[in-house]
Length: 485
Image (tube, rainbow, N blue to C red; front, side, top):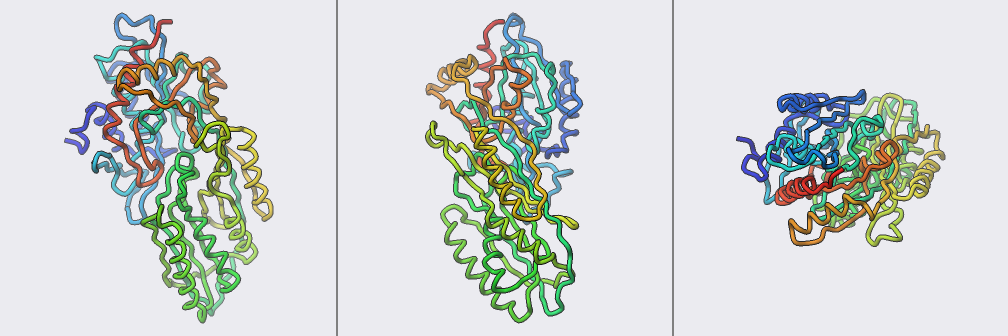
């Protein structure tokens, strides 16, 4: 018996638990795709796969409903891999370990992968369901969504035939999404020279962790701390007084997650080490007080370590710290037409040291193409004040809302009849693959919905159990009410 075996709907949670056993971070989706292929063949369902790795599994219409319009169900098979500092987990080989906690499904020390694993589980449950009433269904399983949307970008114009698409990658019960933000990445690559650490210097490691983190779109307006900004604030404030030398700086894991942890290794003159430590403890007190209402588990540590053999050159150190301190991160503009909706934001996401290079990764989002370009220009112009190489990549368009959508009306009516209340119709400040489909499928009528997921892209990710049943019933009811051709 599995951990989730007593939860309802049993088939959906059963498939979700099976999915949790399969490593599937972005770029490592081969095993989950093979699992779905074996699943389809076991049900004698037709399938095909494209060069990018996307998979389409087709299920015929229920007897008597052959004249209904074909519907595409869509979700991505990959997940964001993040873990707590003390968790020994290899996302390339180890299963996710779900457990139940007070009405929620969580994972032990890692991201849960309910984004979009629960949508994939619902698609498998629908394909296996012999009682559900529906016309022809095409289940589209895309790859590499969390990394660069490369799967959906690579779709051919004739890969699927349906003109109605249900995206199952949303995270709020009672809300129907008909639009999303577009986005892009802006990256700086700084080359550095190494120098031998001065003989009178000693080594220190500084670590900031325990932050909430979260989705860089959904959670960007919640005032959560960014570990890179906190660390860089301390380092910049200390640089003039203590003349330390930086040896390594690593922070964040994913460009689409608010960074939870940062670690630096540095060297400082031996006679200043006690004052430097005291200075850090004072800063720690102030930072914890500032973020206490939001970051209750913030952890800031300093420890003396073996002196590093090498440090980076002083000019690159200055440029890096100035860049990180000045780089904006957070909401830059609210939507002027929709109250409470973030229009434009940017996320300072990752700092990664490698041999001879330092990579700083940021991501921008906006529902306005001009604002998306503007905030990227702002970040790039800052980076250009240094000797960094600037790379812009992974641009994707916003999904423009259609309030006259037929599938919106069907889904809204279905929700009202099932649950006795009207769902909210919204635009989300996050990237959905729906924004990429209209270029190749201009006549596609789309909507996105799902159960409630909180703190996606972080180890605090959790799935609300009670909303999964509602999500499943809504999906089946919508399919049963699709009109004829």
